[in-house]
Structure formats: C-alpha cells, structure tokens
Length: 113
Image (tube, rainbow, N blue to C red):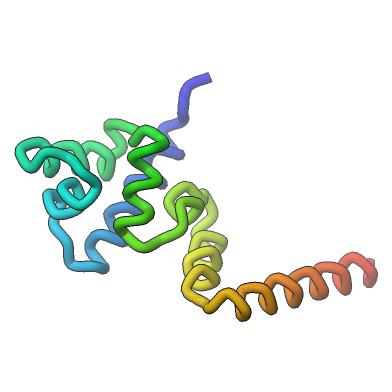
C-alpha cells in the first residue's frame, strides 16, 4: 500500500512550521542536512508541498537539524504532536516524571470506568 497524501502533507506541514519558526530558508535546511546547495531549496520545497516523502534517513536528519523528535514530524494528531514537542524539551528527569504521571492518570481513568 502506498503512503497516503495525508501523511505526506503532515510531514510537509510540520517541516514548514518548524523551519519558519526557526527563521530558516528552504535552502538553509537543505544544506544543514547535507544536500547540495544547488538542489537544497527545490528538494525541501517538494517535501513541504507533499510532492515527495523524505526517505527515512533524510527524515531523521531533518528532525535532528530542526531540533524536534522524529515522531513530531510524523504525528497525525496536532495535539499529540505538540505534546511530543513540549515533552522533548523537558529535562530527562522531568520527562520521566511526566511519563509516570500520565500512567497514573490513565490508571485512574480506567479504574473509574
């Protein structure tokens, strides 16, 4: 089964949002992930527009350069994407605390049903 247009547009949208938040050009992002300067702008533009899906290795490099978790670029749910992004910015000890808290809350919800 082929990758849906929805998935591609999600990656492209998240890529564009993060790039703009950083104030970076298409070319800058492309060069930062190791693309040739002459093709960087066009390649990143195609990813953002959903014309092409970045290969997994490229997607991992994009996430690293943009300073976001890889899962953030692919998350279909906007709220969950923001949770992933926000949690990733916490120190590791706080991430562990957040995880425990979420598990406890989920157990409470399941128990009350």
